[in-house]
Amino acid sequence: MATITRLAWLGLYKDLQRASSEFKQFGYREFAKRRVREYFELNRKETDQQKLAALYQKGQETLKVIHRQAAIGDLFPASKLIIEQPTPAH
Image (cartoon, rainbow, N blue to C red):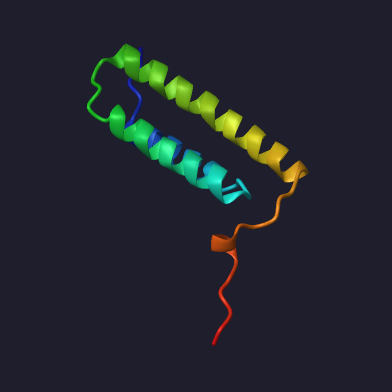
């Protein structure tokens, strides 16, 4: 079994963060970004190659899910929250 390079892990992390940013709704977007970061931090010390391969595969599947859910979210637009709206200049 070939080891997954650090560059591949970094690429997966960046892809997941970018995909998470595709959510239009603030809550979903921030939740997805936070969960991706927590997922990678939790498994940072893992050394077992089989577990790492399974984690990488799960990450790739999660990337597909995030893309799909962001696309579905685009079909049903929601209004922005108060915290997302620009503040008027005084």
